[in-house]
Length: 275
Length: 275
Image (cartoon, rainbow over all chains, first blue to last red; front, side):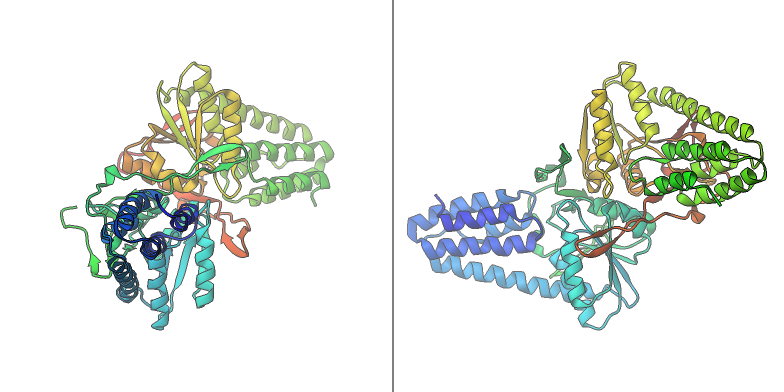
C-alpha cells in the first residue's frame, strides 16, 4: 500500500497535460524520496517495489519513468534511496545542460528551427543557442488538443526569441521554410524509433521530403533498453468535440531512418549506416 | 458597381468556414444569376466583367471560382447568362453523381477509408458506396481550427456509416490502419499538384510511406488550366489562441507523385508514367 502523499504525486502525474517526459521523471523521483522519508525497513522495501511497478504505468509510453524506476534500488535503507534520488536528479540536470551545449552547436545564425509540442530538452537547446548570441527564429505548432505549443510560445517570448505558431496540420507547409527540425522524445526504442507527441512522425516525413535535417533532443534516460518499436504501448486520453468522441493517442512512432541524430548528454547518436 | 444583393453573396462566400469548393462554386453561380435578374444591356455587361474579376479573389486558391467565372460570358443578354448558370449547375450536379459512381468502385467491403477535412465529392463517393450495400468504415480528422471534420462526422452518422474521428496530428498514426485514402481538392494545378486543406500533404506522405493508395475526388472544374503549383496563392485566415497569433494557411500542396489517381466525372486521371 502506497501512502497517500505518494498516491497524490501519481495522480498529479496522471493528470499532467503540458509537461514532458523530463519533468515527469523529476516529479516521479520525488515520489521515491517521499517514500524514503515516510518509511523504512520491510515497509519501505515493499512500497518501493510497488512504486517501481506502478510509476511506469502512469504513462507506459515514457521510457523515463521506466528507467527512473530501474534506477532506484529496492532496499530497506531510506538513506540509500535518497542518495539515489539525488543522483538521478543531478544526472537529469547535468544531462539537460550537456544537451543544451551539444545541441546549440547545431543552430547557426539565420536558422529557422521547426519543432512540435513542448520538449524541455529542445527548449534548453534553443535557450542555450540564444544565450550564446545566435540569432534564429522558431516555428512551432500549437499542438492540439492540449496546446503545449502555447506554453512553449510563452517561454520563447520570455527569452526574447522570435517565433511563429502554426496549426498542427500546417507542418507540411512550414517544414520547407525551416533549416533545422528539433523535437523531443518520450521514448527511444531499442530499434531506434523515436516515440514523441503525435504529429512528430508527420514532421519527420515532411522534413525528409524537403531535405530539412531532423534531430531529436533526448536525455539518455529516455532510451529504452528493452522495448522494440512494434511493442510500444501508446497512451490514449479521452477527448471529445461537439458530442463526438475523438481518438487521442498521445504519441506516434518515427523510424530511425528519418532521424539525422539524437542529441543526448553523451553526444549525438547517429543511425547505423545500413538503415 | 455590383448591386448589394451580389455583394451579400460575396460576403457570405468570404465568411464561409466549413463548406468546400463545390458549394462555393454553386453559390458563386447564384451571384451571376442575381446579376442577370437585376440588370441588362451595358449595365449587366459591366457588372459581369466586375464579378468575373472579383469572385475568384474571394478565395484565389480555389480553381472552381476561377473556372466558374470563365464559364459565364460577358454579355448584355440576361437570358444567355441565366442559361449558362443553369448549365454550370447542371454540370456540377452531374459531375458529383458521376464521381460518386466512379469513385465508389474503389471502395471494397471491409475497407477503411481515411480522409481529411470535409469534401462534398468524397462524401458523395462514400454515400454512393454505402447505397450500393458496401460495408466499410471511415477515419476522419476533426480538421482544426474550423472543425469541418465534425460536420462530416454528423453527415456520416446520418447515413449510418461507421467512423472514427481523430485529431489532425494523428494522421500518421492512423494512415496505416486505412486501406484507402480519399480527399477532395480545391485546385488541381497544371502540373498535377493537389491543393487541398492543409494537412492533406501530410496524409499523402504517410500513405506513401505505409503503402496506402491515395486518391483525390474532384470535379473537372477544379482543374486549373493555367496555374502551376509554384504560383499558387494560398489563402490565410486570421486565427489566434491564448493571445498568440497562429498562422492559418488553409491549404497545402501535394505533388502529383503521391497521388494514385484523381477521380473526376470524366474518369480517373492517373499521373504520367515518368513521375
